[in-house]
Image (cartoon, rainbow, N blue to C red; front, side):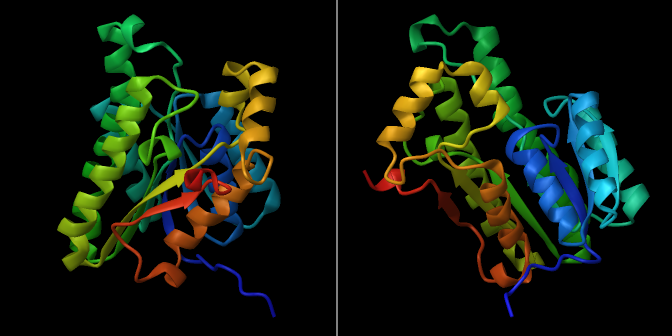
Length: 254
């Protein structure tokens, strides 16, 4: 019999749930039995994700429109999740934005935007859930970084690479600080993944060129990456913390 992840009775937050890896993770976690609070700046995207979850009838979904870079909105979203579910067992920081601007053309507002959403936003959500997890002496956090956090982005700018490296470091530090309280924190570093964000920002010829350069010859799907996130949140990964988990089709080895 095939082994399957079971998160029945677990409740948590997935940010960036309106699209891409965040949306795929939310749908996958709901399919494993988890109750999921969906966070994103796009209410329409959240509604679509929640609709897909509710249609399956397998789990509950709570829509929480919020800007991940806004501290008050983050605190309110976490408070609403606790009010609805009674606990926050897990957090997936799956939100993020991409800009391709060459380094010498990056102005301060764009730099602050990229760091604010991609790194500060993850800090804010971690800061909001960790006191609750520490009091309960349990919890699991997956911060979706990127292959860019292990090397250098081939599609994003220097600010994107910087934020993702910061997210790997943040995850490692939190894992060390909160391990005594039964909390696991890992960075997940997906490689080239065909998300709506990539489709909108990348010319077709470049998409084809990247695929041809990958050892497996193709982009990953968000659903493939979501299954890794589900594993990291499950009891099967009970001894994994402070890690940077790669899922890049072998591209880090070349």
